[in-house]
Length: 351
Image (cartoon, rainbow, N blue to C red):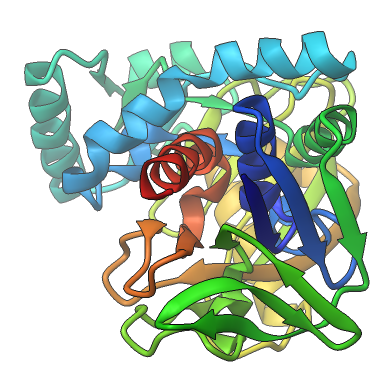
């Protein structure tokens, strides 16, 4: 079985790894370098419970994805010797109004009824959980099992793992179109040749619908720009991931503190803007005011692959032989392993 994958971000690399583990011959196509776009620029929050506050219908899927991460991190470490920064650091979602607190209370009750660990904390309890929190908050929902991973480290480990698995990686690949014969996808046409395959996986992130030959019935995937700011805190003080109404703070535990993020539908414009940085830092300092003294280390932006419904595209497409691993928006890192396994199973079942 030969599988060709378009895109070597976290979805493409994870899918390549899963399929190679099943014994498939895999060719991975990347126009630049693996993980050069959204994958390495992400925050790496494994926030199954906090992210499902807005999408409770996705909670079971997100929790399942989070549950598999520790074992995956151990597998990648055993195969490559590279730690991916997996840490169960917990998440605090803060409330600044009584309405926010009431909403969080209902969410906590719903999650506890599903057997998940969640707790509604008053101001004192929230400050005990995270002393660096702004003292003016009214309380917080605490999700102790939500976690994080370091995306650049994850991508390094995945690239090393697929190299060990003999995945053929072609960088600088320019895809002209997916190849269709007798109403079935049979590979990919490049600008310098063709790659025939029994199955083709579309994992091109925000660029997925720009690949010629992808069926019109596949939902649109649009770029949603997210700007990020990295602070350096010495010594490290913030220890818990903090969520406000418009952003978050992610302490890596080693002094790095990632602050994000904007959500902008501005096409493929990758600028970091004054307004974006201002909004991110305003949110971060409103959550943890002690960060005001932390030096700004770097800043960047990239594109989350956004679908109108908020549902990721995972599994078979309307075109036989073409499979989807895209459209994960804010939860691409969290859903990477789950997506890879679902797509690999769908490929095997479809042949």
